[in-house]
Amino acid sequence: MRIQRPGKVREGLWCLGREESGVYLLEGEKGSMLISGGMSYIVPDLLQQFKDFQIDENRITNILILHSHFDHVGIIPFFKRRHSHLEVLGSVRAWEIFGMEKTIPTINEFSRNIARRMGKEHLYSEYDLEWRNDISGKAIREGDQIDLGGVEVSILEIPGHSSCCLAAYVPKFKTLFPTDGGGIPFKDTIITSGNSNFTQYQESLERLKDLPVETYCADHYGYVVGEEAQSFIPQTIEMAKRKRTEMEEAYRATRDIDAAAKKLITSFYDENPDYFLSPEIFLDVHRQMIRHIASILEQKT
Image (cartoon, rainbow, N blue to C red):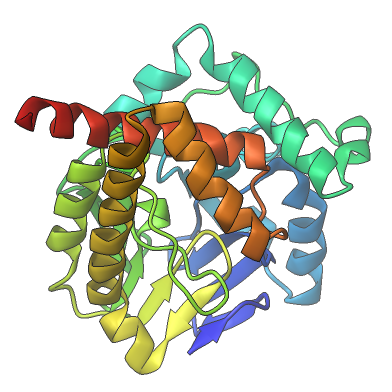
C-alpha cells in the first residue's frame, strides 16, 4: 500500500514534507535524525508539521544526505544555519561533489526552477534557502552505523542513480530509505532512474533485494507498507529491465542520444504532465541514461 500524506509512519518515524518531496524524521533515545534533504520550498511545510505533530525540533542532531542532487539537499542550508550544532552526514563522494565549482550554482538554479514550477519561488524572499560555501559535515561510508539510542541505522553505498548514492536501513523496524537509488512510487507505477550509470543502478538494486523490508520510504511520492513494501525492490528490478530495453530500442531506432531522450520524455509527459520534475530537467536525466546505454551498445557493434 502506498501512502503519500505526511504523518506518523510508526512509533519513532515520521514522514514529512510534501507528496512530491518528502523527508523522514527518525527518533531515538539520544536524539532524532532527518533522513534526506528534500527540495528547498518544503521548509515552511516542515516547520508547520513540527508544530502540528508536536515534534521537538531541538532534538534533531543529524541530517543524513542520501545523495547530492538538488531535490534531495534543499532543506540543508536552512536547518544547518538555524541549528549550527546539527551534523550533516553524506558520502565521501557527495562531499567531493559539493566542493566542485559548478555544484552549488547548479543546485540553486535547479531548486528555483522547481520552486517556480510549483508556484513557490516567493519563499526564497522569506527564508534563507540557497546553498553557499558555509555548509560542511561528516563523511560516512558503507558499513557505518548511526546510533540514535535504541535505534541503529546501517549505511549502504548504492551508486548508479548518482555516484554518491547511499541507502539507509533500520533493522529494528525493517525500514529501508533507498532515496532514488531504489524505485520512485509514482501513481500506480515505479519510476527507475539510473542517472549516472544504469548498469550500476541495476547492480545496486540487486544488493537491496534480500533485505527484509516492511516499510519502504521513498523521497518522492510517499512511502510503501505491507506486502507491496516487501516486494517493491524486486518489482523495481523488473521495471529497470523494462526501462533499459525501452532506452535500447529508442537509441537503436535513432542512433542519436538527444532524439532518443526526447522521444521517451515526450511520451512520458503526455501521460504524466504533473510529474514534479520539469521536462527540461527530466530530458537531461534521460540523456545521461541513454548516453551510458549507447556506449555499451556501440561497444558491441
